[in-house]
Image (tube, rainbow, N blue to C red; front, side, top):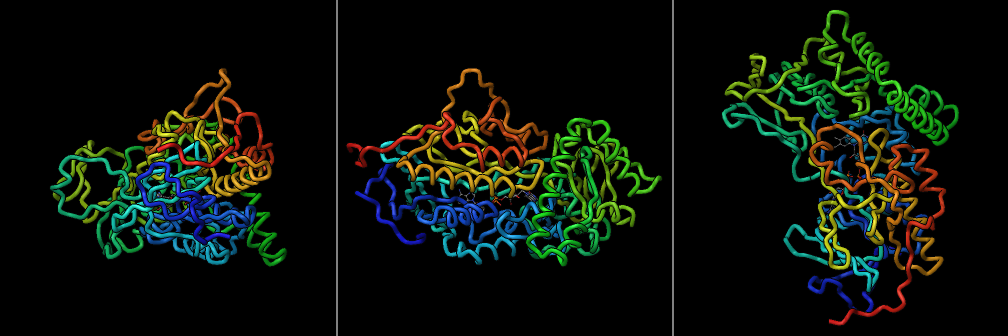
Length: 510
Ligand SMILES: Cc1cc2nc3c(=O)[nH]c(=O)nc-3n(C[C@H](O)[C@H](O)[C@H](O)COP(=O)(O)OP(=O)(O)OC[C@H]3O[C@@H](n4cnc5c(N)ncnc54)[C@H](O)[C@@H]3O)c2cc1C
């Protein structure tokens, strides 16, 4: 299996102008959390399939390798952010970035997946030929050389955002500011912030992670937000899991804790959607309790939107609230009028002086790993595609991608998607099929936005996302239990996905 070079039968090259060096049954794009899961499932459930992972960067881990800002951590629990097939054994359920990266690397090493990764291969173009039932993928090396691969199936595990830069809105007079401006996505290794006055712009997960971490060494940290976010404190350790572990063993304790967290997550999400006003009041009450009666929690912790219109921010062991109470952190809810030489002037007229400004202003959404995708010579616009079971796309053959949950851990969906792809491939092999393509044939199907979320990056880039449909199997559930039924148990041949056999393999006339 696996890393051997399979010769390309009869040397067909669908686009004709790339140097095709290898063929694989499956090409995985991306060696982050999802790519490692995809490889694990392929090895286990489709052991005869050849595959490789193309990774643009020089290391695996994706998000957990890229983000290096102080305090970087998960904001969902590791019992569900960890893989279903490899228990998370540490005491902390909310884990720091380096521990998550080690977990991903250890998983890859344990299952020999690290040997299947080709580093420095940025996939730029994927072109499908129905005549050959093959993808040709062009990948560029850091030297600029373009290498071609062919594969029967393309599995995109390339995440959802642009790795080259984060989102940075422009503000007036930024060039006049004499301090330093840093984006968390490109945190300089040598950045010295001890005893500095810092302003962190933003109120999302990154800002609430960074602020208490920076406050440990800084003179003072101000979190400057245009509008508040829902912030909920939770213990960083899972008491039940830690109690069960010595009694039942790591695997069973982890499994029970995982299901507890899946079910509680689903329960609280649906409660918040059904009773937004009650949930709002409860979250605010809890924040007020953490901050004490003298604090204006309503001003700084009452968002304009309903809970779960954007992701809730979790603060482990109430670290942000404790930092505010200690006086080292303050929150300012206001808008930036302009940068000045010394800091930032706000619309209220107040001025924040700062030695360092951190723009925790978010990500730039990027789909399909930034690749151009072509099907039989026609470029695909992802925004026109309909998502099938949240993993394939209408009229795009032999391609699946991972897009995790907005209201639960990403890995829950990544694991289910990989399981589904393996079932699909085995189903095709057993019947001699070469292609599988979901087709939208139901005229009563109504297109809907893929994600009803008001977060900045969905507002900015949401139009580029594939849509979802009003009915199964085109509906996106954001619900692990329903996806389990859909992806793990539902029949593969559902009448929507079309299977075909290639009668003969020959190059089209050239
Ligand atoms: C700071 C931060 C914290 C987060 N915390 C959580 C959390 O607590 N819980 C949660 O559920 N989610 C969280 N997320 C979402 C997070 O991205 C996912 O949990 C998960 O790490 C995504 O894994 P992935 O492998 O799908 O994508 P990524 O981690 O983004 O990895 C994608 C990989 O694909 C590679 N790649 C992309 N395009 C190409 C290409 N064209 N060619 C070759 N390689 C390519 C990239 O280099 C990268 O290595 C967080 C995200 C961020 C940014």
